[in-house]
Image (tube, rainbow over all chains, first blue to last red):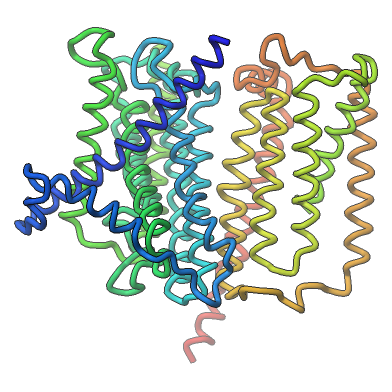
Length: 322
Length: 202
């Protein structure tokens, strides 16, 4: 009975994190962008920096009418937001935040494969939305999403494989247990490739060609309203949390920190994740959107060779130190 | 064809579980066995819908269900690594590629009346023959094998890796050379000859 309670409690905690952290990232994005661009936006709701605007936005989304276009494929159209959002919840279960055994939702033996596989499923949601909307802009958005995923999945996998080689395991807690500080400079190229490819997979600027508002309105999500639209937005922020958490665990040592011991491990994980999330937001404000051909060129001629070079380097060092 | 192979694999696994269960008591199935059969039925159903539905994109989405069901079957057999690779490669890449292709052809919403071809009976015959052959081979090969699901994990990454790189290195390398050859072939085929380009310019 205790086991059942334990599992239920863990899932509950993971679910709470899943509900809270994406909202925090979303709110941070609003505020950071506002201050970076000197366009403050709502500053009065709730007092400090207009934090209550987030609640108001949530209420607004819930009140809006849930419209399904007449020619749309109803069931696929309505199912798409769930398919886009749920994979990120599943991925969070496997990300360890601290050194102790209890600091991970569920230890998955093939952790890296699990997280990358399930993250890839999330993109199906965008494709379903793009096709089922019966809208040419949505279809174009879906096409661009698919092309982007196909291009960036490979460098992401290769970069993750490099870490797995270094640690000699594909389990996420196992990788953290094997981590040494000098892995950061050793794997830095892989880390950059992983992070950039992850950004592209999430369709975050500068890789937001699939939702380019000046060309195709909002890509695959053009026809969505109300809560379903909010779910897609939530999926994007949950994706940021997952990507930053994964980069932290794989490349930045997760709960390892310069000081503070094992007890404070979870603080280090959250801190590193938060800094990476800030970088994600910063990139959105500072870089112009890449064109479709530039996107593909970056993936195939820069990221894939870099990831392969990183794997070669990892192999050489691994053999040399044995 | 991939689909047919997978369907038959699932069927074969179901048969295999049933065959082995006789020794261990067919009348008192464990929870895992019941789940295995149920998921197997869902997988088979989804696969059948995939090949019979007239809506092209729905077929691709049902394929996701079938492939995902197969991953669950692997999980139930504790072959975790294979299960996640199945999701990564088939759901994450192959189906996305399929959908990409379908979207490029502007797959219509609703039924495609021309989705069937006259080759239907032949295709069905080939699929049934392939299924029968696979089921027969698998049942014959694993007749008395029994996986102990309660003991140590049988299909962990470590176990799979060791058996792959200790005992099956040569087939593995041969396969990778084959895949490389296919890759090079695809690149050669997709490259235009210089003369074609000149003609296009005119």
